[in-house]
Length: 419
Image 1 (cartoon, rainbow, N blue to C red):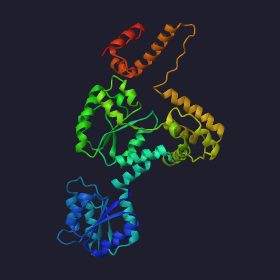
Image 2 (image 1 turned 45 degrees about the vertical axis):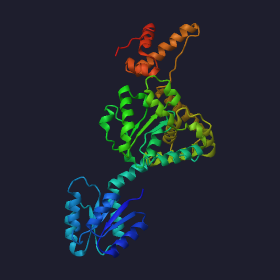
Image 3 (image 1 turned 45 degrees about the horizontal axis):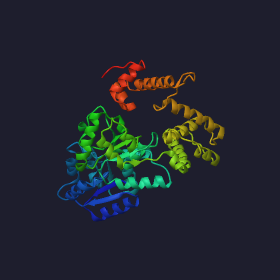
């Protein structure tokens, strides 16, 4: 998004000149001839930078600057414009919050350099840096392009949005894309009640709805039903489960489940494998730019191999693969044998870190009942560990009632602390 600059000067020729020059540089420019007009514009346009003349009728620039900075909350950078006889006054204005000044008659080179420097050190500059670091959903496939269009259409709304898609498919990336700026999205703080996070100062993103306890679920329902009408911000709620799967989960409030019928589906990588070459190029550049890893090139044979690979960890696994392959060597050419070796390493790491996989060996001499008991014992034992030995959390994870679980755990010789 281009920076918006407000030019405040009582001389029409200077206002017109600065407007033309700055717009030629790609900035959005508003102009004001006096303090009252400047205040009116600031209330509606929220400029990223103000160029403020010192001598103006009724209210001079320094007085106006003092008024703006008096509260201590005004973070908009101000550059003073001064004639030769007012340089000392302009320098003095820096004590009141001006970040720089330019002399009249204006040097366009000096002006543009000052504008660029002022913006780079401002909130606008930080937003631009955040945008540069923010991942984008990548792909020219129809499914990705249609999803992008839908997200863009939703930006002007404050209605809650539900996202469903497999782990690693990039739900957080799509949630970011739904927001216009990087400052507009924060992660839900599970240590607080939802009421403590109202009024919303940004869109709140909840990564997994099934991880919320009953209290948070009730609070979320109430907030979505009432608060959204009073705020430009919204709740963005995600899950790896679809509507039908959530219906079967007795731990999820059924009113929430009904809302999930309108969830937006985030596709798995297998649904748009034609985007893999573009994704590879994007993440090679990403890691080269942001982590200073060497640039390496995937030739056509390499791209074809990776298009036909089953990415069980979805885009997150592809990203891990790209990072690993860039770390392996500084040679620009990537060989097929190197790809195959790196894939094996990445797959092993993904499986080891996944909470959804379990490896178990069953003695084939056991009968069916004994084999089933062996599986259940290992399955519940691992879930107990992941649940922190909490029976309520275990019941939520495995989708069973507590009374039945107590009996099952006792029959399998597993111990837990009653909650």
